Amino acid sequence: MIVGEQKPLQEIKDMIAGAEKVLLLGCGTCVTICFAGGEKEVGILASALRLATRLDGKEVDIREATVQRQCEWEYVDEVADQIQEADIVVSLACGIGVQTVAERFPDVWVVPGLNTSFLGQPVEQGVWSERCAACGNCLLMYTGGICPIARCSKSLLNGPCGGSQNGKCEINPEVDCAWQLIYDRLSRLGRLDLITENMPAKDWSTSRDGGPRKIVREDLRI
Ligand code: SF4
Ligand code: SF4
Image (tube, rainbow, N blue to C red):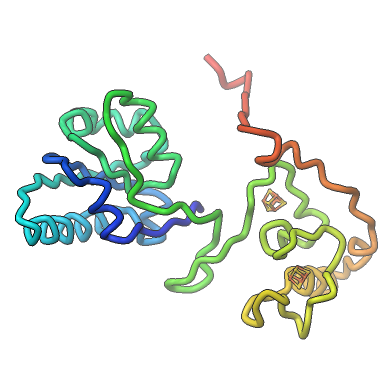
């Protein structure tokens, strides 16, 4: 899932300065699961902004809406009227949602209410951890299903650096060394042969280094 967290209230307040009609637009998918931008967070942020703007002596009309998925036009179209009526839309979706609304409604000013953080996994209640960097050429088949790109601080592909100590990464003793995890898992599965394979230099052209990416499925196009 895409993991994000809400921007500080003051930053959101600064972004809406001067607007009279503000729409807080939540998303019912990933950011709801990570408690950053779902219906509940929209409600809490709306109350906080109403209070904060009132304390400043301003009357701001703060409205609320949440769509099932803000990254698809068909869902944002359901609240098209509310979006178009607003002076400003604060999107509480990931960056894709913000851009979907901006692209669909070119005359509407849309700003991000969240900081989109990473592709992660909820590892325990209230804790999300990065798991994938969307490199565009997955190699989890060689590493026991543990991603060395997202989870090794140096994105190493051929084993640990010299800084790994007691299974922890040199950047922080709280962080597991990805290559220790890979070793342990391959060992458990009886596949340590994989770790002795020399992985060639990765072709990063499928990642962000190759520019904006696009997937076209001709069989699905109409
Ligand atoms: S190898 Fe690439 S696609 Fe696969 S999990 Fe890691 S970053 Fe994601
Ligand atoms: S200690 Fe492990 S996780 Fe940290 S940078 Fe070195 S190999 Fe990567």
